[in-house]
Structure formats: structure tokens, C-alpha cells
Image (cartoon, rainbow over all chains, first blue to last red; front, side):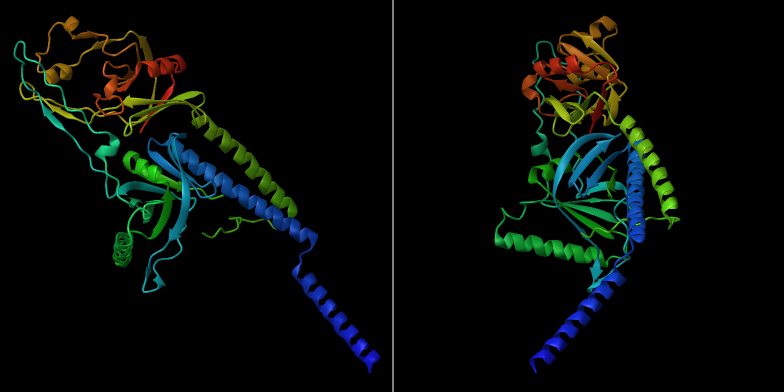
Length: 242
Length: 189
């Protein structure tokens, strides 16, 4: 009985090895095919790279301020005419698409490699203007009153815990400071979470082309505040695609 | 986030020779575009002004040579109650500018609003408009009457108190003066 069992085992092993080799051969490509596939991938990368360079040139040629978001670095840069004005390291990046009753609304729109325009803050940064009326001719010997010392940027512009930069064609970039929730208590965190969810649901149910795509960008708290205070109106955005 | 592998768009050649031609064309185009983009980015020293936070940066490439506290436009509105009832808004303009001229020991030719603000009559004699010393040691003009200059009120640096110009402290102004030649780009946001 023993030799017969060994013979059977040997044949089963051989059959298994042969079938594995056959399937491997079927799956693997010939060297020539592999070479063409690699060349195609390299050409595709070059094509992407040139498309990105073209977009960057178009943006740099305009007079508008623009943001460059590089998911690979990852960082967000405020730019003008090809010059980097400020760079913000990105700590987290997520893409969201609206869903109503678990069904995704809208198709898969591209978000990388597209120039988004008309970006403005929501809630908007308040414009505080002090109006001074001239006092007419001063009397002889009268001490001119010193104008009040204006507040600093930090005193002047309170920054919301999360804010959006909304673009014309349905993209909104949500800026969140990383430790925004950490300092708050459980109740406050829950209330903020619930408020945000509710606002998102209401926004998603609107038939408008608003919030068709949302990018959540997590920044350092100081950077998030700085960006809110300094972002010029009507910025453009390019999310780099490498 | 999901990274999609790059795929070639347009007519995709399936043979090796065709692909080599496409790749070579793309490489050449990439070189041209990189050169064009490099020509658009500032070479040498440039100045960046964050008017919200009242900061001036003197940069060279990626290196920041100087970070200075400055004072940008207050955004105040001044209204003239009599005469022509004019109105002035003291904003610093945003955008790209260049150092158009440089003056040591600049003399300020006070515009009408300076007299209106102080409640003084506007002088008819141009010599009465000249103000010596209030602009500090140096002034770098960047167009439309705007300049980077010194100030007598250094304690107010870091706050938006100017009439649109950029005020810088004495020591920082010396560094800017020494490193920013005519034509230096100024980016204000």
C-alpha cells in the first residue's frame, strides 16, 4: 500500500505545480508586452506632468491670487504670479461627495488637475471700516486728539472653528484646525458635530450645484487662523495631480 | 483618498516606436513648460507683505532673509465735511508691484487728505506741503504714491495704522534698503 500512496502523492503534487505554472504563464506578460506597458505608464505620467505645468503657467499669468494644493507633499500654498507668498503644511486631506439617503448624488467629477475659480470664505471675514469725519479747522493752541490704537489682526478677526472656501463650480474646501475639537468639552464637541452634520445634510439636499465636492483640509490651528485672516477674495485653486 | 494610476489620453500608440516618439515629444514639451514657469517665478530677492498680519518678508528663492513687523493701511475712511466733500479710503493695495524708485532721506509731499485729517487748511504754497523726517531714513516707491518707508511711531508697528504705505522699523528698513534694488518685485496680499 505504501508505494502506491507515494506514487499518488507524487502525481498530485506534479499536477498542482503544473497547473500553477500554467496559470502563472497565462497571467504574466511577455517581456515585450511589459516594456510597452511600462512605456505607456511613463508617457502617461509625462502627460499629467505637462498638463499640470500648463495649468500652473495659466494661473501664474493671471493677476488673481491662487492656491496650490499638493496632496503628495502635502501642503497648501498661497501664490501670486508664480511667487509663493505663504505655505501651509497640510496635516490631513479627505474628499467627500454628497449622499442623500445613502445614495451618492452627482457623478464622479474630477477634482485634481482642474482650476477652480471664485473661491471665497464662508462665513465671510468681516470688513471693519472706521469712518472719520474731519474736525474742521483746529483752534489755536488746541492739542490734536490722538487717533485710537487699532486692534491687531488677531483682535480684529475672530476665526470660526471650521470654515469653508467655496468655489464657483461646486467645490468647497473645508478648513479645520487639527486640535479644534480637543480643547472643547464632550458636550460642546457633540453639539459641534451634530450641528455640522445637520448643516451638511441640509446642504446635500439642496438641488443647487453647491458642495458637489468637498475637500477637508486639516491645518495647524495657527495656520488655519492665519489663512482665514489673510485669504484674498476670489482666489483660484489647483489641486495638483502627479 | 484613492490614487488612480496614470493612463494615457488621446491616441495611444501600441507599438514601441510610436510610444518612444510620444514620450520624446512629451519630454520636450515638459522642458519648455518648466522653463516658461521658471521665468515667471521671481528670481533673486523679492518682498512679500502680509497686510493682515502686518509682516514684511524679504525673500530669495525659498530662503527668508528677513521677517519684519510692519504697518499696513488702516482701512479707515476719511470724509471731508466741507468744501469738495471728498472721501479717502486708507487701504494698502493687493497685488504684484515693483520697486520703482528709491530715496534716502525722503521728503514727504503731504497730500490734501493729510491736512483734512488734521483739520488744517489745505495750503496754496507747495512748499508748505513738504514734511521732513516723518518717512524715516529711506523710501522705496512702488507706484501711485505708495511706498515702503520708516516711521516715527515704531510702537505702532504690527498694527494697521498707515494711510496705505508700508511702514517698517529703522533697522529692518536698512536691511530692505540694502537688499532690494530697483525692479525688486513686491507681492502684497
